[in-house]
Amino acid sequence: MTKNTDRTCVQCGRGFRGQTLKCARCQGVERQCATCGEPITSRYLKCKRCRTVPNTCQYPGCDKPKARGRGSKLCQEHRDNSYWRKLQSLRSTVCNKAGCDEPKLFGHGYKYCAKHSAEAVKGSPEYRAYQNVMQARRSRERRVGVTHDEFLSMFAAQGGVCAICGNGNDNNRQLSVDHDHVTGVIRDLLCDRCNPMLGYARDNIAVLEAAIEYLKRYSG
Image (cartoon, rainbow, N blue to C red; front, top):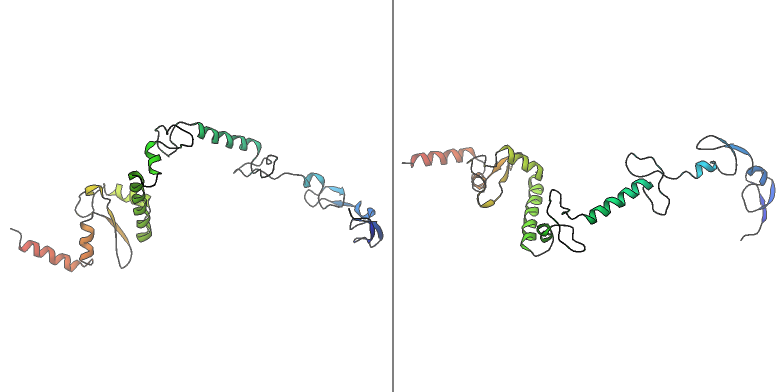
């Protein structure tokens, strides 16, 4: 420990022996707390009550002090509830997948039912099918900027059929999002026959009208 040395008080300029920056007289000068404004006699800028106020709980809308302990972020009530919810999730026998009520597989560490557990196993047919669906969604959102929710809304508005021929998606293939290649404007959902038809015609109305006249000339 450092021994007492000759110092000069930073407030009054008097000489004293000690380890602090101020002499004993200046340390006892009455001042106001920088937080609450109460008069204090201390070398600190805040009173003891303001210096020892614990931080508040980080749970939204909660102003209770955080529970004691290193690394604590919640009050005692919300910390207990969080632990209880986690414990209930571990003890639950229902699949943790949203909207699934199937029982999860028996054994330590299983969180999902047999179907959703198989989807999480790489190399299984269910996993490959799940990855194909997710890849198609990501590709559609990246190319034309249509999210999966927006696609479902368009699909429901069209009744699940092609906007041109009125047929559904054959062979369980999803309808494609048609868009203008010049302006990028999203149009409707088309099947895998009508969508390439517009692409081969380069969206040229004159070409499509000529094709109609051609079919009329040779029909019956």
